Length: 383
Image 1 (cartoon, rainbow, N blue to C red):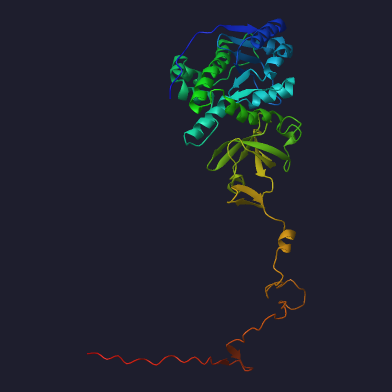
Image 2: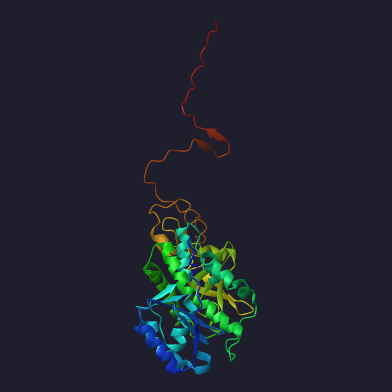
């Protein structure tokens, strides 16, 4: 693995007005820029979240759009850039970003290259189990020198998250905003080289699945919070992480996470891979209201089809009754009739042999002779 060690200092510009954002967007659209790195920060992203800072990075500069201070009007000039399919938006885990931009600001994302998806594809290429890695892990894998130089170890050790709503932005928040976007374009180049996909078209096609996450459960769960997550409510869940005895799902209802912790319930999700979406229903909500426990839709009537490698629904009883053979067993209907005979015998359709043991009226047993005669023992001569 060849590491991209080109490390340069880039100017950071803070955009606070509509005119500044329009000028920056026009400059990017008119340039020969093929890709632009994108990220969003806020106290809570997702369908019911809010963007405080939107970050853009090119090979020449880093742009920080202060949405918290200037209002959502500053995002309007950037809509053409985010919709432009000719300029690839390089994001790490675009799901919550795509969701907040679409549901809160009406801006859909197009032309997305997801670093997390690319890293999972690289793991598959190495013969390893794919999982959803954080940006720090991708940095340690492909840009270790930049990880050490930028002291990402200190960045990860900061337990307290930046307060994105505070103004002016604190130095820790500014560093988080810059570091989370400035390394995405170099990582894209490295991953494209590792995957043998110079254009990145393969990852762009796979990333569409994550972009579509923005519409997940929009109609099924219209209300924010746990109030709409009553027992039995139908929803869809995307598998995000799985361990031997527990699975976690993203349901586009942040900050609530889907979970399956019961062993019997866990078996119904055996066919899912990371990123797959399953039809589920709510089993219960945790006391802290941060987790919703899920059941697979059709729970109790599912079986794993080893030929198709997926969970399938068992046929209903009416269908099974239609498939029963016309000639029934002599025990069929036992104990089902009220007051009648326990066995319903059908007329014999072929000649059946009589039993070899016959009981007389007094209870003594008479064994019927079969006519079989054992062979006489042969005499052997010994010399």
